Length: 276
Picture (cartoon, rainbow, N blue to C red):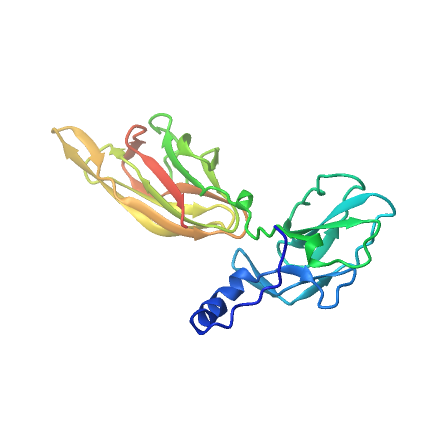
């Protein structure tokens, strides 16, 4: 739509409302200079990227250069991180404005012809869109199980052999789950241990492979006997919260055990969910 200079009404009943709205309404508003020339004025604005809030001062964009013949549609864009404005030059005689480059946000189209000596308001078309949903990524999560009973590698320090992804988008390989960078995750796991006798136990805990250390709450599964001969454990939860700055590999590992004969594949699981 054609642009106008932001100018809240002085009517008493609306003045306060406009003052509250101005930060949002006026952000990066494009308009002609008070004395029109071959530049375009942009009002102040603000951008949020992740946890970084950037305040941007008013800017002058240009100077634009008129085509020597026909007409041209140029585009004003801002960098989505810094808010610095720049001009993308269109094609002479083309009715389609130039494409928006990656990591830029659109502010305005400017129509020029070979008679243009100054950019007035009717040549500026507001197209501000200061949010881009294409940068949104779905939360990372996963639910994992064993492909069958784990009957080997039951010593302390061995990983529980989660090898099947039941759902989610986290990467799993070699009993190791990779957590993407710059996120916070809640990790839970329950294991059903079968022992060679009552009184045995299995303790598991989450292990940060990159850091080389255990983290979170230990799951302590005490084996009990039921039906007179079957030695199985209760299923408490191994719990951890991990915040990542780089991609981080984690495993659920055997922290301690006694009289352990297998970990049940049908009754053991791990769940990892990104905390929003």
